Image (tube, rainbow, N blue to C red; front, top):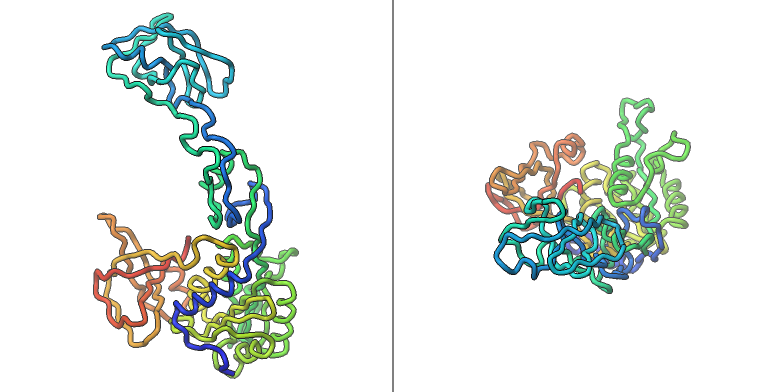
Length: 417
């Protein structure tokens, strides 16, 4: 039963997961730019031309020759026309001339400076410019943003609004991204019933299936909360039946890249998963020195990776954020793999007696002086969903720490991106 590593540290578990998930790096697929949001870029995207491709005005004003501003002002220049953004016609100014120009319009031949309209006075066919203007002002040179061949967005970057805008600005209408992992979610336990159903005296409603589906969606993996007919959840719920769990796992392993289960992974009479997966697959480790979430199991069935998470809701969320999400990132070739940790000061003292890394629900807030502070919430039971609603972060208390004083600097793991 225990012919596999057990009671790993959090760091050891993360390293094992990263290694195994990287071995199952998903292939690249090409998608339309509008479908690339939240996907991981599979290869560097290089600029095909300068951005901007031509010298243009950074302000609304008048395009002039810098040498016409060399002498002490004011300067009186003849206005020869107007150029709007998008106007690609030939235009040229000679000494003593200027051209009205709008933001983004190409500079006419001969111009190297733009004087903003607020600094000018139009007098019939002339523009009067005061003293103090600087040659070269308010001009965007070609390639100021990207030059031909520059990396616009690098491989491994998750595509959000800024990346989408950058890719669009260089003319790409499709990009190569990592395929999304095919994920199957299973919850287990006779005590669970679905919301909307009648709940027996010894039963509770299934929350983990919906929570896991939502956390996957926050990772860009569109596991729908409802099935196609809108009646049944897309995740599978299984009773505490060893053979039914075995059959469901083998079936999922035929098509999924990743299986996530919750419940049935500890050492109770109905906790079948550790022994069952040891029979039909290979266990990489069972149990991690973390609280909550210690019974987590990481394994494989054929080429399919399996995360068996503890059933308590807080344990499920903590193990997903700390261990599962980094694994998903590694499978997609993300450049940043691992929990997104911030540093904060502790608003109240903390003490613990165990030798595990603890993830304490907390409220983090930025105070008036700009510093980030974290306050643990009062009740930390791993079954208490209320704490997840009240909290916006988890304080990471290292294994070796027993007491932490007020103002101690701690790492926090945000509960939302």
